[in-house]
Image (cartoon, rainbow over all chains, first blue to last red; front, side, top):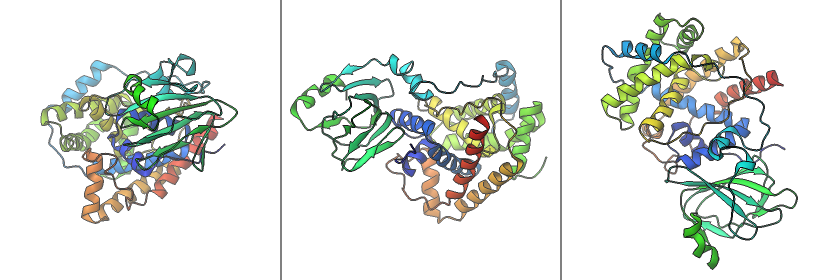
Length: 215
Length: 180
């Protein structure tokens, strides 16, 4: 099924510029791995970076700089040509597999109630990212945000308000979004979700549990 | 080697890739190293660190030359992505998750027409940036120098990115076909 919900220009430009928090970068890299349309758009934003570099203020390098670089090249030897990567068999694209240490069976899930499970992935602390497992037909507790939340669907689908998000789709939620994603019947839903602020749950229990869940 | 169009850089890059041509590399170094250093200093690095990282970036250009694909990126774009990644690594001390490679193994030789058109689009894009109102151009530069957060980046760039995107999309589609 074609991907219907894509990355925004802002996110693609920030990722191309290399200024996104690591947690968001992981979600962007995962989406781009699945979506040629966004891969091509990213290429265009990287071309803007190339143009900016071309026009960057030049800073003279020291006279021996090239010789030092040639020495580095000789010392390092030639990088091996990477073997062709096998066609992906599992669920997770390569960048996500790198963070999990394997595919979906390697995830260290923890229950957060209501059948929902999560696994927080290690990144720099300016934002956080986790895998979410939502059993088919279940809801993620109603929550708002004080920042931005990106949710990339890897398996299954969820509905939020009037929209459907299926495999490959990404939802970009902002402070104004107060949403209750509900997994569709059928396949259990697995998502990768990043946020740059702690989630605010609208029910009392999840809010109390929040410090322990690190979300 | 004279001239400074993208075509020449691509030619030099292919000489590095295919022949390990040190003279071609020296010409690329002379052009790009001062720009990488200037770019990193604008991004908040000291001169000494910027020079060290610029050398490392250029050494990476040599070592990764076999991954350069002139149908998908200009040399300046490709060098930019390497410099950007080193900036994240060396200056911000963060990891950089990269999209999955497309895994088609040994590259089929890209279509010469594709390469030419991408080069022309790249030059057109550079002209379009040069012609933006100064304030808008400065915002774009600041975004890439790392002075703006993602929420500060303007949603509207005013840049004609659709054409270059279509060129890259076409190159991706061809590679996908070659894979299957």
